[in-house]
Length: 548
Image (cartoon, rainbow, N blue to C red; front, side, top):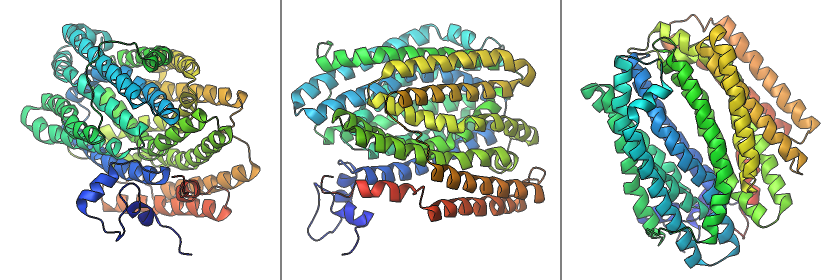
């Protein structure tokens, strides 16, 4: 019998399958915005993340080339942290509390009226809190910048105040976008979650390249606001197509709403501690020399690329599956999904972290050293990338483990682990900023990430979930493949003198000649071992069943 391909699954995807298997453009759009299996959701999220991240990288590269590691860039980064901190309080609560509550009740109940009331209340209070935060932020904007950046004076301070006032009104649009995406994800519709970041990145790129060259750094802030507004032009019709209408309802009487509030308080406490840690980081960073904040940002963005490009697209549909398994009291399925996630995240993130550590100078020079981003900027940014890369595996595994706990609605543990990480981060800032300067801030964050991840893993292990089940074959094959990968990169770096080559085609070619064969060897060993199946082989058997 002929094997089923992803395309076969796509064109026979309920509820829009056609007998002649023809696919019009309109039908394609309808299928993309209807419930999908885990395989298709993963593929769509990966493709969407790749496209979005390409635009995001172009945005960062454009920012570096146009503004470099300058006082203007420092002001922009410090101003943007204020709306993002407020936004994080709302959107992370929506993502990690509203989605499991909604999906859990929809799995066991067909009460659509109850779901509508719950969504109306969530919509109303999301708007109310957003507008309150905007009003407070606008009134206190000067004080906010002074609190988070006491080292800013003169031009850097004035620019930061102007830009934070421009960007604060974006918060209601950001929060509503997160809520709508959460509603659609609870119904296994993941395409909007990939389209909205693309829209945001494209509009923000326009703000940097066009408005930034026209009215300088303030144009970047205007582009930020426009991007958040335009995402709703896509999301609102998409939500309406699912026959979901959000209405104002100024009450919190629905039992699901009360459950959300109970689950949200520990998470808000955890995020509040995280906000405190971020503010402390910014306070220290503002005292550093001009350009250090920009270098911290550019290196941090690069170290976070594997998380957003590979880990998050894998964890997003897996999170829904974990929530469903928990709601159905299927511990074996929950354990299987968590174990799969651990193995996949591990074999993906470790070689990338090692690659960033060993090839950090040529990577920064190839990607960033253009325009106003000079040799000094490359040296500063590449040094910081080393310390960010140390925490990459912890960030990736922490994302997986926290979703495992959120799926079980164990929010108190994640709150405590978050506060522990913040305490470690703040202590590390105090201890490391004087000997290491900007690198001390990056290292403190990496150490804190490891503390949080190990704490989450310990809780899972002591409560019957074994995400890190020791298997000698796994350790042997994965460790051997990783060792050969690291050796190849190290030898290529030393033989070709990659750290000293100027930017040009020789540097690009020799770096590629070093990295690609090393990665190919690593993947070949894993595939031949049969111990660590790759993403496609791992998830496909569980989703091509009639129950999907």
